[in-house]
Every structure is written in structure tokens, then in C-alpha cells.
Picture 1: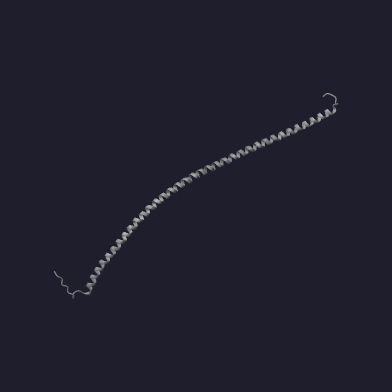
Picture 2: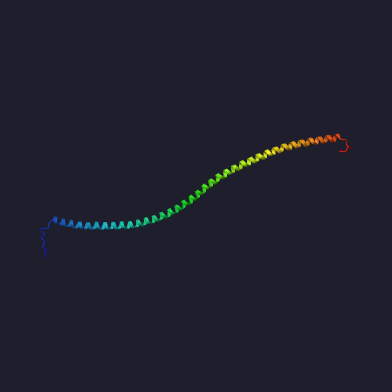
Length: 147
């Protein structure tokens, strides 16, 4: 079988149609290759991105564990502070009660000392009167008389 092509029957429209048809296949091939390259790049990026997310999730979990531990220690410290506030309040009340008792004792001793001063003053006055009386008696008694 031989094809005899009559060059007279090929016209410019046929050549343009065949060239357009061939160009369409070439452009479809180029587009297919570019699409496959883009899909491959996207798949590679997705794999890297998933790795980044795994690393980020692990880092976040470890950071959360550290933060949870710090929060637990802060809560323990706050509980101690609340106990200190309660103890401080209790101590202040105790100090006020002790201060009141000391003031009462000081007042009591002050009153007792005032009474003792009054009594000592009275005794001192009596001793002075007794001395004056003895001096008068001695002065009134002759020097050779028995006492």
C-alpha cells in the first residue's frame, strides 16, 4: 500500500489543522508534566509539613507538661501562703490577748505597789511618831533612872 499524496489536494487549512492537532497534544503533554511536577512538590511539602506538625505537637506536649508542673508548684506555694495568712492572723490575735493580759497584770501590780506605798508611808509615819515619842520619853527621863 502506498499513499500517493497529491500535493494539490493539501491546502493550508489542512496543514494548520494538523499542526493545531499536534500542538494540542504537545501542550497537553506539557500541562500534564507540569501538573505532575506540582503534585509531586505538593506531596513533598505535605510530608514535610506533617513532620513539622508532629514535632510541634511533641514540643507543645512537653511544654504543656512543664507548665502543668509549674502550675502545680505554684498552687502548692499558694496553699502555704494561705496557711501563713491564717497563722499570721492567729498569731496577731494571740499577741493581742497576751498584750491585754500583760496590761492587766501591770495594772494589778501598779495598784498593789500603790497600796504598798500607801502602807509604807503609813508605817513610816508611825515609825517617825514612835521615834518622836521615844525621844520625848528619853528627854523627860532623868539620866540616872532605869528604863
